[in-house]
Image (cartoon, rainbow, N blue to C red; front, side):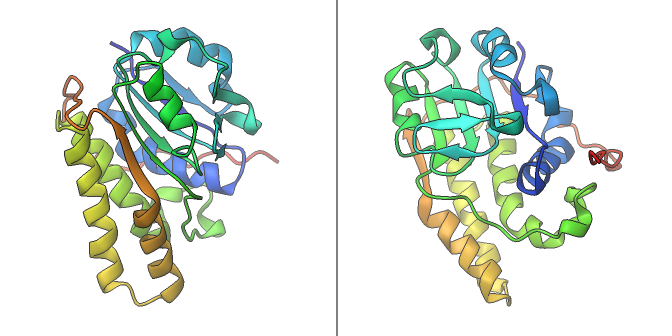
Length: 220
């Protein structure tokens, strides 16, 4: 069964978030990987009905999540319920928990983990081609990675969500930089889990690359 992993990479924030998913999540998953220019509506429409989990990053709003160059992937009232029915969703994007998340549940999604405000973190622009090496970004993004990996281990949506929240708390307690600490607290406060808290997916093999991916090419 394919997994939809949607990874836009057209600006610093999408490149950073997608880079962390490339490094720590993609090795565990069978395609379809909608990376870069492939992260478009037509590709999502083709693969989504066949999947059991849909993991997406990209810019979002209360009723929409976008892909490469902010092309709309999912918007309230503008998708076929077959694309979401029975799926477990993780939306690493701003504000999608407000209206899009509830709409996905209304149309048959099993669970949706998202955020009701912006998702914020500090990133190092000098590491844009190797975002997984960004220690500042790791503080916020590793809790997300831990939660997604828990889903891929076969844990429930609630267990995975709790792991993410615990990661924010743990990192905030030891963080000395006040800006990064405030980002962690903000993301934890705005995280939301909708739908069936007991939802699970087929567990994937625990595969970790012994080395980082090659640097992501930066368009001129």
